[in-house]
Image 1: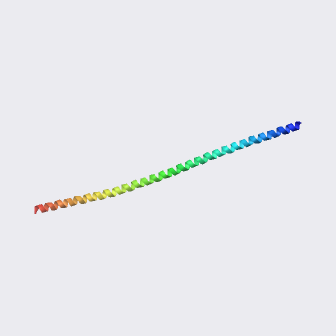
Image 2 (image 1 turned 30 degrees about the vertical axis):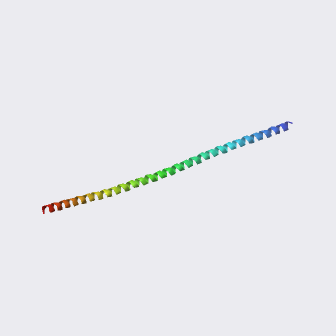
Amino acid sequence: MDTNNLMRNLKIFIVIAFIIGLIAALFYLGYGFFIIWQGMAAGIIIGLLLILVLILLGICIYLWLKNLWTKREYKKLEYQLNRCQTELKHEKAKKAEQLEISIEE
């Protein structure tokens, strides 16, 4: 009877050890899964932020170039305006001179 009792206790111990081992394995897999899940989520967030930074960098470069081109165009137009003002002054001076000549005659 002692051997039957010992075998029965041994079977119960093996079943309980197997159940505890199975629960521990599930917790270990779950923990690993959650760590992997957090890593993937962090990777996705970092990827989205990286894409956002690249888009903003592109917009900054575009606006900087647009500002540069606008300043360049402004300088060209300012030069043309000064040239036109000078020509207009010369034309006014010629007309005034012609008017004085025609009045004198």
